Image (cartoon, rainbow, N blue to C red; front, top):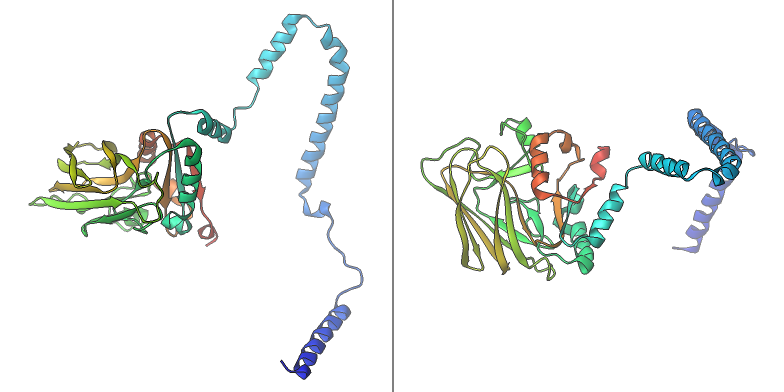
Length: 334
């Protein structure tokens, strides 16, 4: 910039500041703290302070008497204080379980698109597993908002579709039993019975960004509901057949499980003339930390009040989470 232009810019800035000095008053009338704080809150604080001072005076006055009270009176006072004590902090209960429990610790991590790709959850999962151990990426669906994440890569046949609350609202599905993902997947439309057997598949492998614990597959769990007819399921681990069974017919959410023997390549085949509702597929260990990444693109977390509460409760009864994290942001303000 030329010297003249620099001088001109500086002169304009000085003129602006000089103009502000004429506009603003010399004495600024700023509001007091009392005017900003609600009067009711101030009264409550003052009354609590007075009650605390009164309690301290009573305690000081009764100190000498308490020293000569009989032993039975002291025991009675202890019992009454135990009855009125506040319940334990739920977060402290979780931290104690994390430190001392020898079984599985499960965390359901909900959020909007900011937690897609397993950005936040993978860091939390790996940090907690340094001390507590654990394997697998946790919960996923055949159709995910992002199929390639920091912990797994999921591929599925083209006939899989994902349904959520908007699908229920638009009339695509007839119920709002949406499970822990607030969504479920099918490879045939709801209520349809095909004249021929329909096949579908899901393949799950570790991503190139996964660590050793996330890429170790020990156990497979599938949460489903199969309301119409038998559906055959076959699980293959590393090319070898692990199990071949028939999913039970049930109007409630049910679990299918099998061991995976530490494989890193899982193929799940379905075959039937109808489709079950798949609420979640989890690859996890029986011990240690499991952190489930559950992204809901465009969500503000309101789906918890819109889904069938009994179905959601049954899902949590099967998963037994120790902690549920709700991580929502910009969608709350829109």
